[in-house]
Image 1 (cartoon, rainbow, N blue to C red):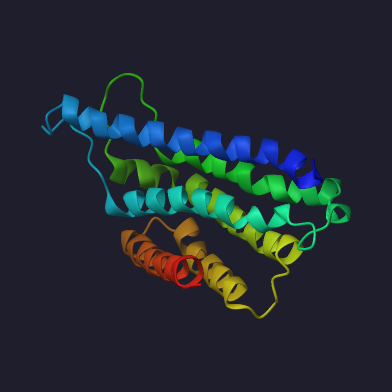
Image 2: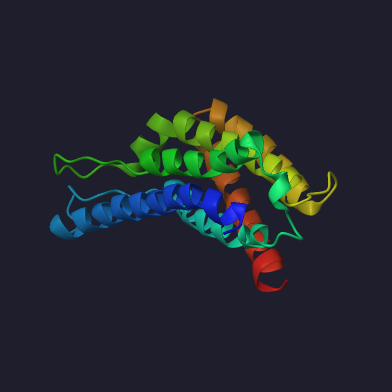
Length: 198
């Protein structure tokens, strides 16, 4: 067994749990609308929140997908692993799990939340974790994927950090809607360019 096969087990277990947590929370929100028959008591979805959940789901899948080359010892040798690189690698699954835990409300009282209110109440936590995640993904690009300083992947993530900062600091609805629109377009572009038409 190569070192990556051993070390990746914990990372991918946490990543899988994050994915399950996100799906359970979102499914329970959809189920509440069915229970309430979409009356006034149903869950009120907010497109900014929904787009963030969509991006979160696919970011988990993409991280899992893009880690496959680390299986190849010619790409990243066993000697490249140490406690620092392992902890850096684990930060992405840790942060993804934390985001999935907080992004969708877990109200066990049966009440249907308004996701507009929820998003703006917790946006500093949600976007703070997402901002930190982007920094860790940039670090992962440099350490594990030989990311060049001037590559489009790094530039895209740096732009994302700058766009996300006002969203993190402000409750302004317009800033969040414009920022999330930019993220969504950039995310779709990234999927098409790097993962569909490679």
